Length: 538
Image 1: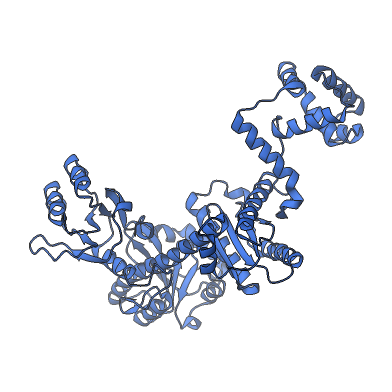
Image 2 (image 1 turned 135 degrees about the vertical axis):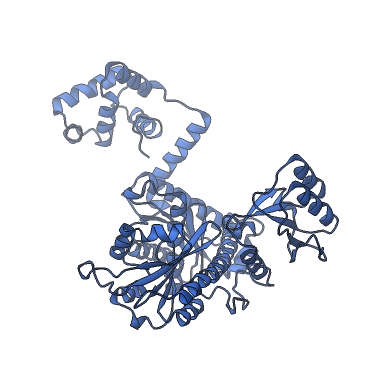
């Protein structure tokens, strides 16, 4: 419950959630008429605020095997309350400011519907008389109340659902529906007008005048309202209208926003639960441990050769300061897009986000050589089509015939992704056989760092000399080695005259006390430069 409702509704105030066990029901606490306390129920302490009231409630639920107590935040955390929680083992949760008990009750009751979140599937339970999480049904219901075509959008102006009658709106609405996203030029104008600011700050509907004709085809007015749960803004509702709404319809729109919030949370909770379950199963399978076989059975991937693939998004240069939430959102977009891409060409597959990487297990249905080449083609096709803003790096692991092979293949994928990230621009899709040397250098770098190794010998003498005399002997040596001793090419790379470059090479040999004619010493220097050297490259 904390995973699904944590940021929006609930916080763990006192106690330990992992010791609470399962939750089987809800009980609303009324001090004047104490209810029957069912085992493993979550007790909602409505109106319980003071220390004495909290202590009394904790004392009266003790011994009834309740799962926990929910109080309105801020929850008193006095020494006596903490001591009572530790004594009884009953965790206390806080209901976030701005969230209503009615919203929380609806969400918890829907989550406790048997066979729902535990399996990751939506059920037929309802919220407000409409199928739970069915935002299209909600949009159509609101359209009937408003007498206007409706869209429901998330915080990034992506269309989550829309009603019928969109043909009654203007061209910009049609463009929005087809692209499932508010076009950037319209979003920019709305941002400049302060519309999004008003939606985020107020619970009141906002009336938006149509855009002037020279700004596009947004020719009808809009009425929009923010959708929020507590202090969190979930999205917005947009109605394309011919005139400002009357008081009755404005009130209906405000009531609709509360209902939409529940459906959006319910939809998100179900989706998040399914994603977590799939990620857990895929993580277990990739680890290759004792439970890997059972995980593969549940994923439908048991008893067949498998290809492991990995993708990792790299934000565009202009997005270096993007907040963590936006990064996570882009990563989830990548995962969803890749899952759809694979499903279209290979239904027997599983995709999930684990950490900062999107992993996929793909059943090999062809001979192994063909399956390997096909996996590479699939990744190339996907990377070439995906939004440049996400700019994913992709890796293919060796085909795995058994559980241990899956774990080794996942390690190969991780190693390749790291090489791709450190050598940006060189490749976007690769296999370990193409980058094994680079991966081995990175492994050596890790080992050296773990042991605390430092550069020694000839390279150490050159580094010290450069630091003392402001020379460039290390850089000269690296250029010479990279050019296989071709003085002309190395000098051109450093923008110096070849004679100057030859002199610097001789000085490097003298200062470093190294014989550059010896292939063993050259290899040693090349390896040290990549593992330790200034401006090291993997």
